[in-house]
Image 1 (cartoon, rainbow, N blue to C red):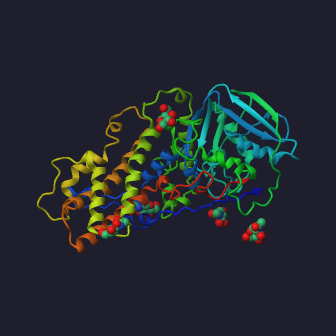
Image 2: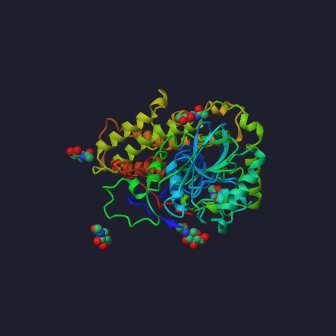
Image 3: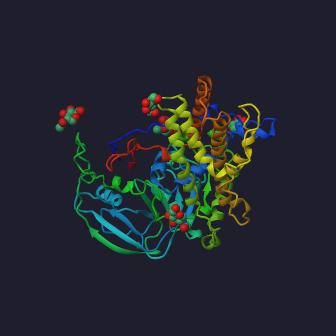
Length: 496
Ligand SMILES: *[C@@H]1O[C@H](CO)[C@@H](O)[C@H](O)[C@H]1NC(C)=O
Ligand SMILES: *[C@@H]1O[C@H](CO)[C@@H](O)[C@H](O)[C@H]1NC(C)=O
Ligand SMILES: *[C@@H]1O[C@H](CO)[C@@H](O)[C@H](O)[C@H]1NC(C)=O
Ligand SMILES: *[C@@H]1O[C@H](CO)[C@@H](O)[C@H](O)[C@H]1NC(C)=O
Ligand SMILES: *[C@@H]1O[C@H](CO)[C@@H](O)[C@H](O)[C@H]1NC(C)=O
């Protein structure tokens, strides 16, 4: 096993966990008119987690961040796609083996598996008909006993067995045997870049080329020079890191076309309720499938098998592009929320000007829902009940159409719920903040310093809590932006 630490490491600042620790169960207050203000999501609710799953499933980087995958998604790899397989001899595998979507990754194995630097063979396959694959999200190619392959275990062994983390040949054989009756051609995992565990090299693919390649580096690697800035990554045998960056951001790897409408998630409370108590009080980094009840395993597995039946491959979709829809919500809010948080943390932290500036940004977000008749009555400055119609218009903005559809698949209903609940929480917070600003006439009036201080504290709490609950990977980035050779990286994969 060769452990290659990634340099250029820049550890991201993990978002504060304040929401998780302070969140209370949904508080139902007696006053129906103001109820929406205080209806917090339950700490056991998973809408935000499912939202993040769908939003980030195709991108590498967020899946490296939260590496313990919870989603399993059928998909296809289109005809014409090239798959690479590096090895130390010129044989074509007749049993299931691993292939890469990027040549950089297979070159590494070619070097690893050849006895000297002369026996490196690069087999290139071309997909002849769309391949049926099953995709595991998270850092699913990381063979750790700590959660990255839990979801695979459920299918492979029928339970999570951390001791079998390194049992790769057995795993691929079992997965392929199980997948045969569904016509599955392979399983896709995130390695440095994506890999396809291919069940039959001669079914649906043909050999494009088989070339003896000169290995540009030797194992073990020489010590990494102190100053790596002057050297391209390729010089260090790290070309696959460059290739991994191609899929870090949206839309990710477009060669893996996921059927979102068949997505199955261990965060789905209707099929894996036993995980609620396992996750309770844990940060998402610690979430695992380990601990799931046997009954839930049976339910989840049956659900996955149901998603793989023949008709489902051909079924027409509802026509909704889920990936795009989730992405749109993040696009709309991420920059705006981030700006507001920045302003709330600015040096002039409680001046009237800053409050005014923030109020105008809040109004910008609320604008499409700022219904003319929704205005404060003569009530107290703490009464936000008048803003209810604004909140309602905002909260249902993305899902009014979806909620009328009758032909959604179970996965689509799950995603529809996640987008609705996530958007509802965003709207609850921003409408509440905006209503505070309207109540205090933050646009025109000079508030006294007490009011300014109070509003500032409340708004900061609101926005920090929301951003922490949403926890979008879009907010974890180099500031200022990184160069191509420098990026936010997580501890790397271990090669076996
Ligand atoms: C992985 O799990 C083992 C126990 O199974 C534990 O001892 C170890 O600390 C964990 N490692 C990490 C990095 O979480
Ligand atoms: C590289 O760094 C190590 C430890 O920081 C030092 O001992 C060594 O002399 C350096 N090598 C060069 C070539 O600068
Ligand atoms: C959340 O789950 C925990 C653990 O199962 C449970 O003790 C708690 O009552 C639940 N909270 C709510 C609000 O459902
Ligand atoms: C959905 O939209 C994304 C771009 O947002 C695109 O990459 C993807 O191919 C679309 N999917 C379908 C099934 O049209
Ligand atoms: C802070 O306030 C002062 C005086 O009002 C102003 O000159 C300065 O530009 C402000 N700084 C920021 C970051 O807004």
